[in-house]
Length: 519
Image (cartoon, rainbow, N blue to C red; front, side, top):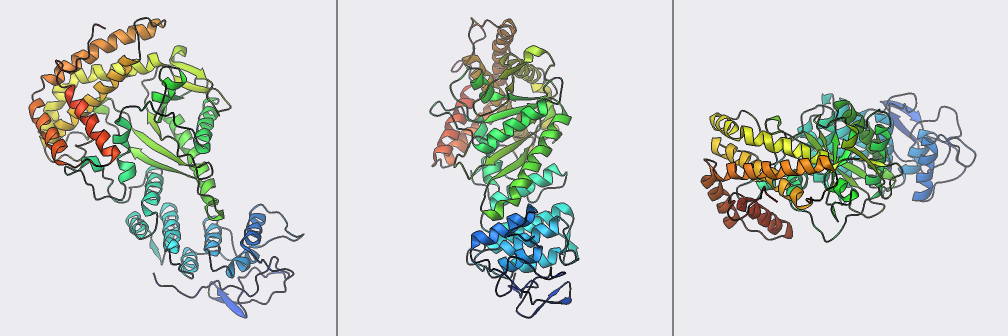
């Protein structure tokens, strides 16, 4: 977009306070326009806002509805102060807030077109103004606000983000909001592991490949630190839990096992919502927190949540989920990802839930007991054992259902590739069973866990035998082995992924890697 003359021209000098009644207009040396009307711009001033800190202080005072230097701040005073600042886009950001919050300026509504025009007034060398415009157009798309008399489409926002700095991260955030609003997402998310050549031409690679990264084995080298946003998320969960008689949102996965002293490290935090209602409440709380963080972005903060959906598959008992990545710029700690799944199979018995103190969290954290987590895994194993062959036939006949999170076969072209995806998901479930077996012992004092442990050994061995005798086993191994041998593996992640997939293939051979049901 070409730079234009601002409808909201800067004054000279900028002032703290409007002295005349009805002087909410944005000033120029002599005159300016607002919504096509010429307005007076001459304003007496007491003191000029001379630096960025003073200008920001004016905006903070306005939003907090507090006087500054004994006088009430108006929108015109803020815009006047920002008007001479050619080093930032703060005037456009402030105008954006007025527009999105339906706050009138000079008794008139600020239009989206005027906001874009203001951002476009001061194009910078780093193209930050393009990112600011793309962010605003994303909000217009989400809220149904027109630009140039036309609705803003998700794909239009996508294209704008692609042309701006840090666009891929913004696309993740935008798509997550579309998902939460029930709107179609922009573009097509591609998992780099889904591409046969190992290269996916996608701007969403880092979030789309998250499902693959999560399947990699735990690292014992380092326990991730929890950043401030992650701790706030855990606090939100416990706050919601207190509104129910039985806590519906539970920590599970490696972090829950870590808190239960069953492992020495964890990589991510898994969260299970046992009801749709609790999942929606949690989602709305995260959205509200993210909106509050978004307001502070232009004041120097860069804290945010990235959210994106992770589809499930009822046919294989894989629940729908979404990933949350808290980005905490203040602490400098990357922190773990959070995967939130919705699974109503969690039983309501007291023994299924444990209240455990977690470092940095004020309230006790409710966790899914390891016995209940093992029971859910056993149910999935049993379902796969009973349905592996019928599902194979069904997938061979056509795309009866989508199989997500298959590492290599996310976009199958034919029946065989759909079946390969089923085999890969079965191996991933079997690998999880192997992890669970490695952290249990025969001397478990918990009788329920002991019973589930014995069931786990038996079911894992049965599924392994079924996979080893599967009609497509040879073709599947050949296809995956060919991919492993032809795709370059350079980075540490790519090497670990190759090693992990190789270990999955090895489980197709019980004689080489047996999950013994007798130990």
